Image (cartoon, rainbow, N blue to C red):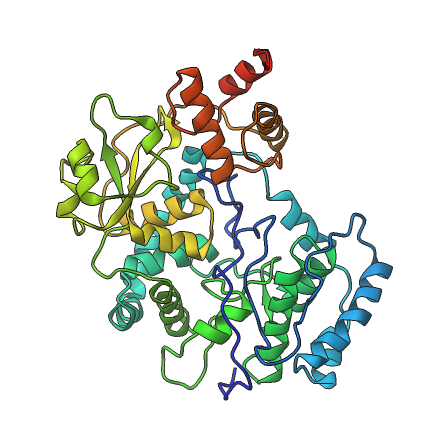
Length: 442
């Protein structure tokens, strides 16, 4: 790839790769990059001085067909040209492209329901020994990225491991075809059109060849799975060869990853996640990623790290901190510091962020969790989650019955639990669903 001046700046998307639905537990991912969030636009603008690329926004297609896809590309081409893509670039990039139903299927099938976090964390056990080897073999490059960005080397290495299994699973989708197919399907049309524009810009500016535009089914590229827009804005040349090659150069990939986290507010020298020891009588309704208190306030409530440390011994007294319960009040309580939220910026899935944070801790020499997970507690399917949400909606709670577990559902569950005298951990379970089924709505 050749690094030359860009003709315009492309603002970054909200995550390095499109992540799964925000929520504490997602289903276990493949080693390939995580799936895109199922809904909601990200604020991405490619042509800052020109016409809006997608004034119509998202328009889901119920039954995608090759004919419909070809008609969509015909409508999209003039908008891409108006945004600065040359006709020759478009025609070359689109040569041989057809509707990729596998991209659409993988994207659609990844959302909804709620798995069990300890099942997800089993992958950390698989990644850890290989991660130690990869960390040792690439220590110089990782340490260089850490010095230049202030982001811990183990944090960068953990993202590398979780995203591509240390470079072993980079994806084999032609991302132009994948992005165009996902844009046509329409649930996140505005987002994927902007990413397609970014991919075409990479090609047009000589930053990649067509052959190098190979990555995940959702359009992410390289060792640490950057979306094309983030390569344009936050990709960095780490080995001094004048390129930003996030696929072939680990120096470039590590520095770009650290730069992404620094850009989003990484706090050098601070931890990201720690196992918690909660005091007797802890108010469960204070826990959740949507609730922040200062380290000093948590200290006053008696919350400690499992090894007994006060939170103010780990971060500043005014630092915002959350206590999270990824398996409800019966599971392992965790202390989430601000750097944990940088992993959520990378991929807005609580399960992903916990896995990255835990692997980074283990790579730094920490032990596994001392407390246990409730093995008898099952997950929830998308249908079960939708049913639970529907019961809460019927009781007047503010949420959407979409089968996905995010902050609105957590808050509604917490409020219902409080009203029913249950431990208000905000965590939906099969037992809670059965209670709602059998309870008369007044």
